Length: 137
Image 1 (cartoon, rainbow, N blue to C red):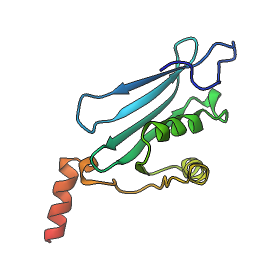
Image 2: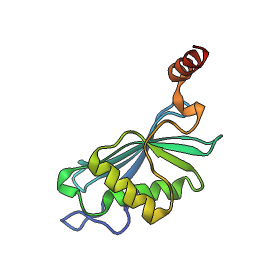
Image 3: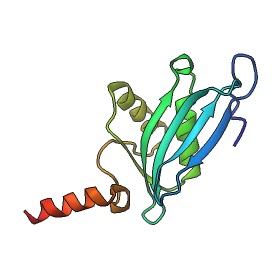
Image 4: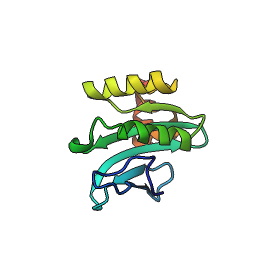
């Protein structure tokens, strides 16, 4: 993945987008955005379950010097295009994060609320075990 949208660095060279995946099934994947000097300026980490067609945004970070230029928005839109038809959730959010994801929900019509995982596959073994134990009591 190269040439991130029409955005470019201050020196006019295009930004570079990479996709990094873990080897674990349903493990985190991230889109990494680097500037022309090779420095990481943004990152969107997420997990998906193809079986349930659900996903969870784990982390969205844009370097302070690059914030308010639409890069976070572009990363989320790229994710939505990459995983069409998925239901989404996010981890707990800061106040600015809630405002951002509320705006993205309005723009994309895709719910991006924070809360628990969307399916048992994204919970992990430990969390599933704890849930089963608490249901028994």
